[in-house]
Image 1 (cartoon, rainbow, N blue to C red):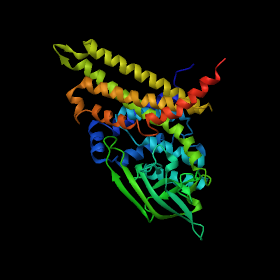
Image 2 (tube, rainbow, N blue to C red):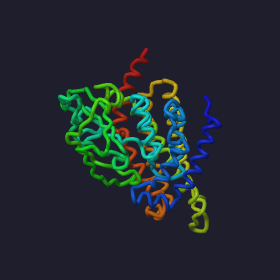
Image 3 (cartoon, one colour):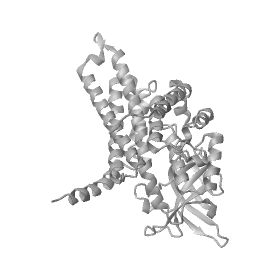
Image 4 (cartoon, helix red, strand yellow):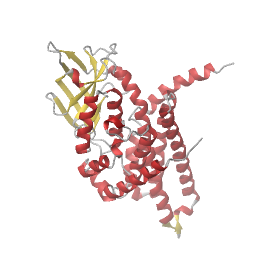
Length: 387
């Protein structure tokens, strides 16, 4: 087992640390959370530095990095900024495009991405009655006499919906019935006629604006379909394993940032004549936090390595995502306890990290759905081992 990073990966992390120091200092991040907006200069610089093109095949002008390296970039960005940044969305967009898109679709999306730095599209998967239960979605497409299609339905929790130039909408083919498993992916320009976006306010992750989207007779054509007709659900499942890993990288980076702040505070804050880090109860918290971070890092890196080497992560990605999401929140919670009152104010970033990591226990699959996915597989796995 080789736990060392390559020289290129080390340089990547150092470069991202410098990028965050330039664009995401304390005051800048506080303003971004207040306004729910990242300046175009910062998003454009991420792409110009090639960080935003990691994972995109070289034939499309990307850096061609493996998923472990992409994950390292997400972790580093979240750690050194102390914020939930939209770069996981960028990485997932590039994954879906390169895996299922035509050359024309990929090239057009990447060209726009390079120009602005804004993620190519917002993912429109969840619905008010279809979050974890994807097959209960009711958004559907109907073919028209001229060969075009009309999309109707409602999507919720579109991250960056008001910023991205397009949306990737999952819709059932012709029939919204639950029994219909034929689902397609559609690239829909945000300014299409019949698209209505309504902002949603979250408790955390304010730096990423989120929207409710209503689709009323939105016209699309075959050129807008991403992947094969009816194959959207299978493509989504392939993407979710990668998304869970990248989401865990966000939690890992944020929990490390919380640890950085809490340990520094413990070494500097004086109580009863000495730093609080000298007290065993504080040391115990720090030990528990570090244990969770190290365990999470091992889980995340191993799962990404398996993905890159063609090893099934159906079970391990679910177990990993559940563990890391819960651990990140627990680390942030302990960090807030160590800081005490200051940690519960907007003057420190630990409070934002605490709220952000709580949301990560929903995104890319809830804790409970991770049990549903992995639990069934574990029963089968250990049953086969009977002698």
